[in-house]
Image (cartoon, rainbow, N blue to C red; front, side, top):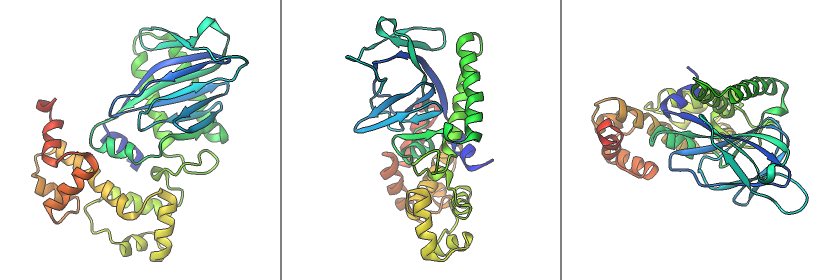
Length: 307
């Protein structure tokens, strides 16, 4: 299993398609804040529009995917003359359909949904991503072909909206996220995603830390794994992942710890040792700093009895 697939499994990810937006020109659609442990996403299949997240304004074209890990409020805007109109929704069995007020002819076909993830690995994974993440699959022939296939399937299910549609759309949206997370910086995105290090030598180091986070990962050992000098490795690692080795290793260890705390009966001290902490107190401090709770309380809250 590759690292992206493993991360999505550990995150206990669920994908939901919320609505299909067929918006006319001169429309503004406000998207409210999502709940904790939710990340909204948008997939533009046809037309052009803009998406505003705080002070960030993104120009979207067919094949563009935007994910907002923080779940912050944002808006979708289509160009048009005169004042901007709002939107109206029609409920469906599986998802809503949103159109411009006054029934304007659609100029975009936009699918909107959200990912729900767990409070451990999922929270750490999504918090480690740029906000927002913007990927343009239409920029390369290979990714464009894959997205066109996904788009056709999504549209087909949207028209059908029958038994099994929700499950099929959820699976397709999960595939979409895997595509996003493995897209390296380049023509498709200007965003640095540590899940998609383009340099194979850095990717090997990343994979090693994710696979065995409890190992003694010194800079010297990692640079040997990458076949680079120490200075070159550190420079390339930060450029490829957008973070430092120390921050990344802490993240990898806490992801593994969250999984152990929720799937095994190992003591907190034992979990600390398995993920590379020689001191239970140091482990607890790091866990609380990144997840806002102690390992013991996290385990309690994550158990079926804690729900």
